[in-house]
Amino acid sequence: MFTTDIQTVGLLVDGNDFSKKEALLTELVSKGIVEKNIKIVVYKDKFDKKEAYTCPTFGINHLNWSGKVTEGFLKDFIKEEFDLLISYYDVEKPMLMLVTQNSKAKFKVGFTTIDKRLNRLMINTNVREYKVFVNELFKYLKNIKPNTI
Image 1 (cartoon, rainbow, N blue to C red):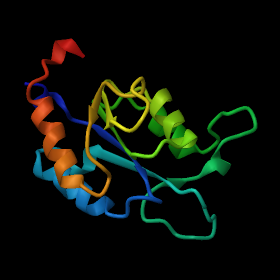
Image 2 (cartoon, helix red, strand yellow; image 1 turned 30 degrees about the vertical axis):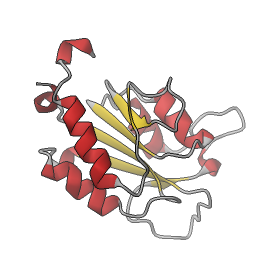
Image 3 (tube, helix red, strand yellow; image 1 turned 90 degrees about the vertical axis):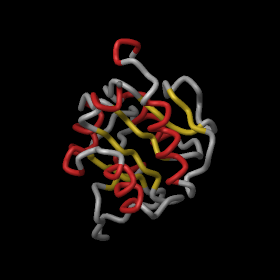
Image 4 (cartoon, one colour; image 1 turned 120 degrees about the horizontal axis):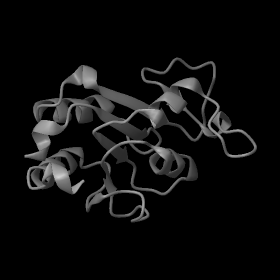
C-alpha cells in the first residue's frame, strides 16, 4: 500500500485563498503523516517583508527578472524529494505553478482546476473543503501501488 511509503510531504499553499493551514495540517496528521515530516510554504500575492508570517512565505518578488527563484527556503523546498507534494491551490497563479512544476517531489497532487500536466493526481473539490480533499487523497493513495509512480 502506497500510503505507508509516504514519509515526507511538501505542502504548497495559496495563502490568499486559504487560511486554514493548521486545520489542513491536522487532517494530514490524522491520516498518519508525522507532523515534523510536513514542510509548508505559503504564497501571498502581496508579500510584506515587514510582516511576521507563521510559515515560510513567499511572493512574486522572490523571483528574479529571468524567472529564477531567489529565496533560499523556497529553493530548498523545490529541491527536496518529497514523497508527496500537495499543491493546495485551485486558482492558477504563475508563481505557484512554477514551484509545482519545478518540485523534485516523487508524486504530486492538486486540484482539477489546475493545468493537468502539473500533477499526477487531481482532486475535484475546492480549497475550502480541505477535509474532503484529504479524505479523497488518501482514498486514492491506498489504491496506488508504489512501483507505478
